[in-house]
Image (cartoon, rainbow, N blue to C red):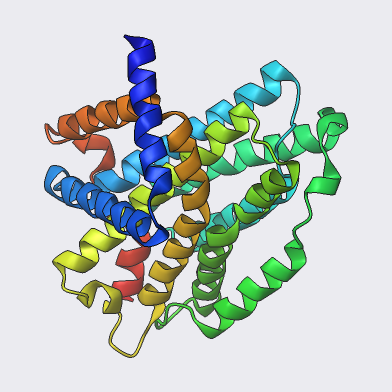
Length: 304
């Protein structure tokens, strides 16, 4: 039975590989649209997109730490991606501390703090404890160029409000830097010409997390007929730029996720089934007490 199912999957992928690029793009777009429609009908409270995205991201982080502490190796990991991640998380924490009066901010601060501490722990393990297994020659992306480019873009395009101009610019910088933070990791894997198992789990979790975040944007834009992109006024393109940054990050991860799904198609289908069950259970309000809060960034930039 298992061999028959495996052969059927091989025939399916063989057929897909023979299709032209245009047909593959069309089918991929169709699958994404169907997923967005299903999510739109299944999830009524869009706060759940954020919840599931952060849960998937946290799961990937736990897998990464498990590898570092049990396997005693950091092979396949990009130190530069971890350093960029620590930088934008630190910036977000500073923004959170400056916006303490915003409703629901402390939950976001705690999440960023957890991710920052885990990232700093990863950096410490790579730099000092597992230095011998880190291949610096494969980590070739120029981080200063990325940081400076994001800083310049943040100065030019950032949320416009009456106060906290530094906070607005810093927040925009963190959004742009997060969008390209995974690029050094993908470049590292391309140079290595292989993907270490636990690193693959970690990067794939980032891809799923970004897809859910992008799905929230797209559904909100569709339901508001585009006005969601201009909540600050037609003359302010901040939300539009932030949406484009989200798309950039999603497309950077899309190629890796495609080949990863192809490799683990059966496991992926099972995960999709389990996630769907969890999302349906969310509709019963099991987590309403803890997560019934709106994103503090939108509430602050709209009402100030």
